[in-house]
Image 1 (cartoon, one colour):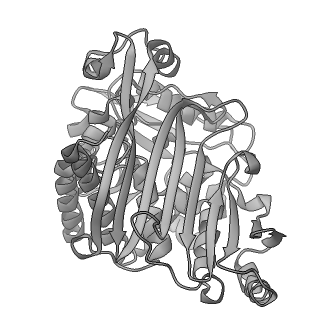
Image 2: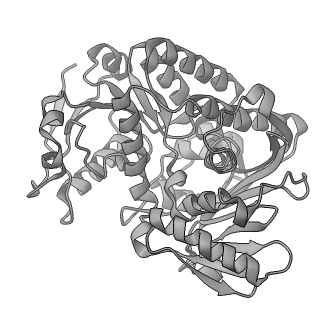
Amino acid sequence: MKLRYLGFMALIMAGCNDTTQTAETAKEEKIRLVTLEPGHFHAALVQKSMYPSLDSTVYVYAPEGNELKAHLNLINQYNTRTDAPTNWKEEVYTGPDYVDKMLSDKKGSVVVLAGNNQKKTDYISKSINAGFHVLADKPMAIDEKSFAVLEQAFATAKEKDLLLYDIMTERYEITTMLQREFSLIPEVFGTLEKGTVGNPAVTKESVHHFYKYVSGNVLTRPAWFFDVQQEGDGITDVTTHLVDLVQWECFPEQVIDYKKDIALQNAKRFGTNLTLSQFKAITKLDSFPGYLKKDISKDSILTVFSNGEINYKIKDVHAKVSVIWNYKAPEGTGDTHYSIMRGTKANLIIRQGAEQQYKPALYIEPVGKKDEAFAGTLNEKLKALQAKFPGVELKEYAKGWEVIIPEKYKEGHEAHFARVTEKFLEYLQKGNMPAWEVPNMIAKYYTTTAALAMALKTGKK
């Protein structure tokens, strides 16, 4: 098989990102990306921005088909946009041996993975064993079997001095960042409550939609996205983000050992029903593929087990995470997120409902009576926070204060992929990650995959 070159050349911007690097950096060899079977649009979002340390040529290995076309179309869209166009050049190989070819060619040093999750853990393992660094979309494991493979991949990565990192975009959502910042101010937050199963110390809930827009267009999802054996149950898919945030916010920069620090309480899974017409609207397919027949009732109703809930203890703190997927958001609405961290002095709450016009907002609500002493302390501590986040203010209301956040911090989900990629490249250039990152990734995937096993065993749906 021969390489096929796709000339997705951008308009060259005056003063493009590459010209901003220092003379020293310019002398260094650029890092080259390899994209393997990009079946999910998150692979393209990694390339929505340019990065000074990355070569503009990306090597793509994938089978021919709609998923590859969708990926390349998005890259082309970024290359040809009017505002800050990128200039990626995609070099594509589509032979039937594309995985082995990628491993043997070794055209780059970093493999980007975002696609079929049934294959992903195996791709991670093969890439690490072949000497690649890996930047992988979540989830990196969708069941206990793949978790064991992932855990070994991390051990091999350590032996080979390679980085294996997952794309946790929600750490860069500004309300979440500020929720974490305020929780680190004991005079305002106090200390994190321990909570109970019925009243957890931290709760994170999110609602998502199958029908959605990406980069201004209606997203076409692959049919396998609706097969939990390939995409993963709700408990092991989007819930990954929520478990990550519990760890990142409640125990910042602390190592979490899943064998000692995680104790599952209960878990459940349940389905979302889609009609054939809804399935067609999302996938552009006229019928259900054979592998979905197992999940179809009444000839035309597909049940997708995309929803899940986990109650667990992490370092003796009760946490609850839950995810729900609906078909389509009502007009004028969108995905929503709810989060509460309960402190001994105040609760930090993110709401994203109708009152917030479906945009996330952060609130500080003191525990007990709201008084002038607390208000004075809060305003005094705000000054230090403003040094890190200039322009952040407080607006008082009946129960407490809303954190007023300047628009410049509200980048949006798609922009967060650049933030994650920048962080990964920073770690790559340093040659290591903080000591807590790897054990906490392992703890995260233990939590989600063990919770799925519990939900399946107990039969809760």
